[in-house]
Image (cartoon, rainbow, N blue to C red):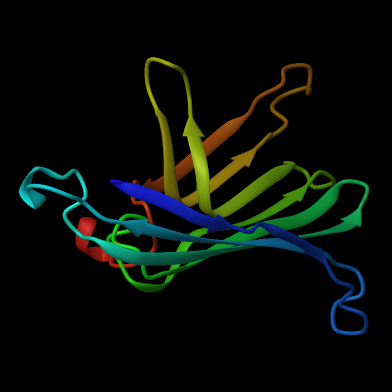
Length: 169
């Protein structure tokens, strides 16, 4: 048997944060999995060179707050507690995803600012990539305001996790 999934137990929780952050909506998930890998015969021919029991736990937290009808802050964070040779190259606690976004529509140039993970997309023929970085989009009023404009500026790195991100630059 090359590999056997022993268990995956997703769970969801929404907990009131009471006096700590009463205006925020905070919720998240946690899921765990255990995998048993083994091989018979010639081990060098196995697609799973590392055998044994491996495990990983995924944590995700989401948060948001509406400051007004035209202003919001939201974000999410994804952590992995990994001991599996097949889930990730790294072991331990790994920050896989992070995003913080602020949107404000009642300024002279309404904007959306994003830090962390976002999908950089301009067109199918140019940029289409999930990156870790910064993005700013704003909609300035030009001239008499009849024309609608949108300006998008972004910079980032294509990396699976935040660990050792400076080594891939």
